[in-house]
Image 1 (tube, rainbow, N blue to C red):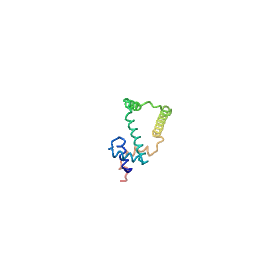
Image 2 (cartoon, helix red, strand yellow; image 1 turned 60 degrees about the vertical axis):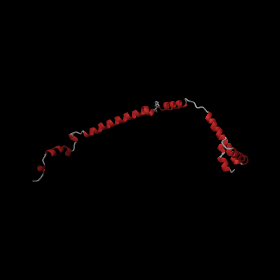
Image 3 (cartoon, rainbow, N blue to C red; image 1 turned 90 degrees about the horizontal axis):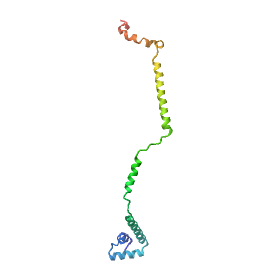
Image 4 (cartoon, rainbow, N blue to C red; image 1 turned 90 degrees about the vertical axis):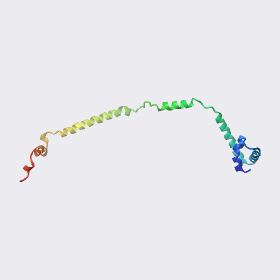
Length: 139
């Protein structure tokens, strides 16, 4: 028996599902081949680990505890804000609003000028609207 056939039959050999003549061939090959004997040892170890895992009983409340932990972590908790967010930010916003109102009042005062300081062109603007175009023409 060659190594390829032996390694192909290792699982069946470990489970005891091989007919007698093939079983003896695998046993003889394992006695003489170190690589196949090593593969057989690894297969036996793997089968023991799998069997031990099957025997472990799971906790029936594990899923419930995990889901409860997920739900409790998703509930919004109050976030501790730094001093900047609590005190300085509202103060800066209030100060900037006050500065904007002051600037608006100041600019509005420049627009509301008295006729004494108004240029002559602007003072006569209403008069020009009253006069007819025919008076301005040289006909």
